[in-house]
Amino acid sequence: MFAFNFNNTTMHIFYGKAPLITFLKSIKIGDSTIGFVPTMGALHQGHLALMKKSLQENDYTVVSIFVNPTQFNNPEDLAKYPRTIEEDIKKMTALNPEIILYAPTVEDIYEGQTVSQSFDFDGLENQMEGKFRPGHFNGVGTIVKRLFEIIEPTNAYFGEKDFQQLQIVKKMVSKNNLNVTIIGCPIFREANNLAMSSRNERLSIQERSEAAIIYQTLTAAKEKFKTNSAQWVTEWVRKSFEKNPSFSLEYFVIADEATLLPCFKKNKNKKYRAFIAVFINNIRLIDTISLN
Ligand code: AMP
Picture 1: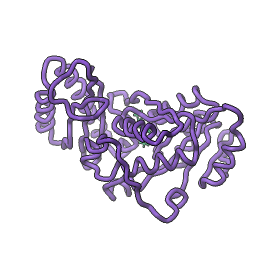
Picture 2: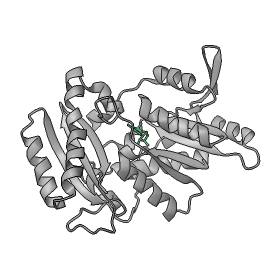
Picture 3: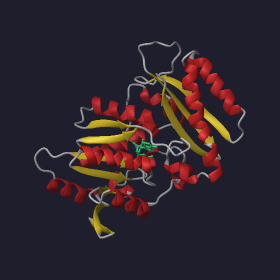
């Protein structure tokens, strides 16, 4: 364990699972609860909102910072992923020094075998992110399951920004009868409504400002979906991005929230959501909005 001193407060930081497990055993008495927030670091207000919720709802909050190599299908994306651990520690200490941080090494998690387990998420993994990022959700499933085994949280907090991931984690928990409650949290946005993301760090000021078009398009799509079919709206979004040379649209999909299957014919009993992935200057951004 390592105690980080900042403004005369100390935070518990663990780089290895063995001392973390011992520490958690020592503090967890009776029916006290552990809230868990898994992250890949480069923390922003969206991450901190998840931590605040966990701090409010649990006796202890564990945050992990781990850039998980097995969920990256693109080596350049992995290499360029921002790593700002010292800044992250300052932000967490300022929020609440009682947060317990687990920042493992790749070796601590994978023990020499940096590979994913194979999961069946009942087809949720075959849509959108799963289509365009082969192996991504096996990597996500592998790391989340491993972290749950180490931390044994009561509640775990995930952002709706990665809505497909949220559904997949819920599926993994129910299929494996894991004893943890998964809590989805709303998307935290910049002033121009760009969804906060660690990857935004890589955008220039100009790109960050232009990226406001992503959420503008989603809200316009929501409006248009009231009176048009999913196919019509999808085509409208494709054409709007075609006119904009700064962006390359990877996908725009209107899907059933529960199954994530694309909507072909509207059913008033189903909840729909629009999902988008776009590249701006090789930086991949995703966003989503509930449609009804
Ligand atoms: P990441 O570090 O990107 O893996 O994200 C860690 C957790 O924070 C995931 O559950 C994300 O869905 C969540 N998250 C990331 N960005 C946001 C945001 N803008 N608003 C809410 N949650 C977010």
